[in-house]
Image (cartoon, rainbow, N blue to C red):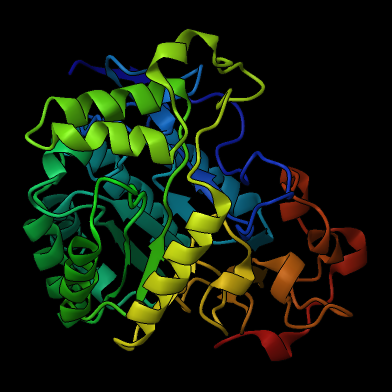
Length: 384
């Protein structure tokens, strides 16, 4: 794929741009290293590739990103965890993408704030700690590896990403080096993977040392579902295509009648597994994970009550803190992970000094700057 460089205009760090209704996500500072969908993995069910504004035929990289993030972190007085990778894989096998990702991470380390990465690239994850060895001891980050399929069926779900075995091996290496890691088995496509295949998957994940799994059954629009079904049909598992279509209530003969995405609503008509089937699946998989001494959480599609108890939030990793600035330097806030609506350490006196974050979702960029009414930060919450 052709690589194209572009200037990023406007504010880089931003929250999820969706209303809070039906969302479980804490406040994050999202970082898009590339334009949405600019990823050589080209997974057929990728939600980012089907945004109306996505760029799918080339890799568009924001060349001024490190400088802009440095400027924004310098101005900010409060910073939720940074999330690298929500619209493409920042460790994908494109040299220019990996290089600018490294530069962004160096800026983050300079400011001493939390971040995490989600990837399907084992080689990129291992290369990252070789290029930035200080990450091995850096306490405020974690890496989530997506392992959504068995090796045999990866040819359907992520044919151009790292092999499933390589991803498992990378998780084990990172865990042994003391780096916080988790696994995402989403989307776990019902009808494509059988019960024994899923059990094989979570057992292999357990053997890497991972203690937390995030899963979903996925949701699709007409384009991503059509791409997924085509990938199944072109594999040796072609007979499973009709079963997947039936579970997700998708009729190929009616594809042109389904509502298409708009710039205001990316998905258009959504295709989910029936809610009762999702509940049954997640109850089962949570039991299996917990029986292996792991915790379990569901990405978006069911309420938090279906997750393992006492998690800081669905991502499960307890080292991604909100940071506040004191005397020009960021410090983590104890037990504060950005999930302000559900688990603020002190709702009567939020330790971040920003009670507006208890209700504001997504936050406004101005909220990250200390207001005149909240200059006094309760230092008992700061971790030194």
